[in-house]
Length: 394
Ligand code: KG4
Ligand code: ZN
Image 1 (tube, rainbow, N blue to C red):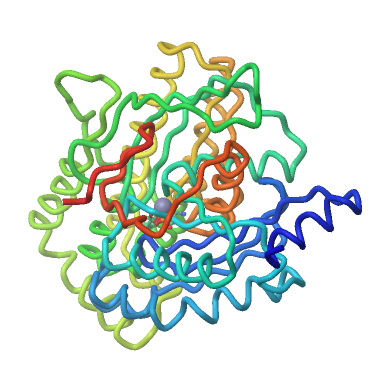
Image 2 (cartoon, rainbow, N blue to C red):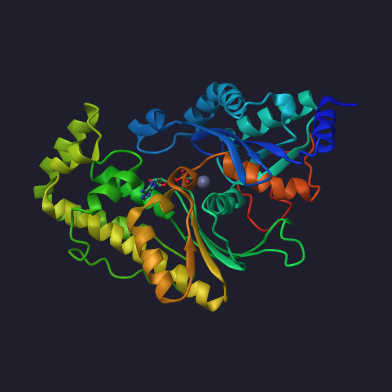
């Protein structure tokens, strides 16, 4: 009998039915590995961020990202296994992100997962990164003892995505993988991308979301009126390039703000990246602009998501992805959701941004349903959620 099967069978005989899945995530600029038991209990979660590598470019540089993943993947997986007090032989299956994401980045985690699965003779499960973000909310709900009712509307809002899905669970088998219907998505920039680009224009630290989140609290959110984005066709689509351009024009019309932008650039070059340090170098005009930008983005996300939730008769609202860490977004969603009778669920902040616990959790449902990937598994940079056979990524 093969080692992996023996381990699992022995534990089954001993009455220990736990299924432990090693998740591997490398779709963008975080190399992550985690072990999750039965899709809900996080035994370990290790994330190696590449922020320091990409900072000076103000965005993710794909070639550098794959090189960093190559450097990090083995130690990150090793650490995840050690933190879970296990050996690789104890793992019941390996879940890897197949897409969407940067092809060079995806290939590192996917190839590593494939090789591990082959060498250890473990089942391999392919995971859609977006489905991982949905499971991040479920992991948190489980940790906090909250029950999530389906169907749900899920907003996935990060540096790479702004998407709305109606998520349905199988009424006859709650352990089965969810089904997804795409309700809307961004026509241009993702919300997190707009945060990062605006932060770059204003010479704030990278990534822009966390610093804008902190500085926005010190400005007047009604000072600059950006006007609501008009989108023809689907009312649940998003667009954030207009607001980003509006910030650019606002700055062009105010040359008096250039000296403070130069001062912040200087501070960043000297490693002074803290929100308080940058705030001390920001006028009230800049803080008002930041607060107004955030307010406009948050209101748009909340308004369209809740309108879709009403239209598509869901029972709960889920918000996931890096931007879900935003303080104002959480407060506004909770307040507006309550008014309209929706319970809103978020992951904790570490589970909001990319991690592998969410990948292992998503892999569990697919593993239990008998899904297995083989050695032919390839990265799918444009893998849409809701279909089982992704494109080839061309
Ligand atoms: O999910 P994630 O880690 O990676 C992607 O898949 O993109 O999200 C990263 C994005 C970045 O654009 C970052 O600026 C944004 O999430 N972000 C935030 C906050 N924390 C991270 N945006 C707004 N407020 C935050 N607190
Ligand atoms: Zn993500």
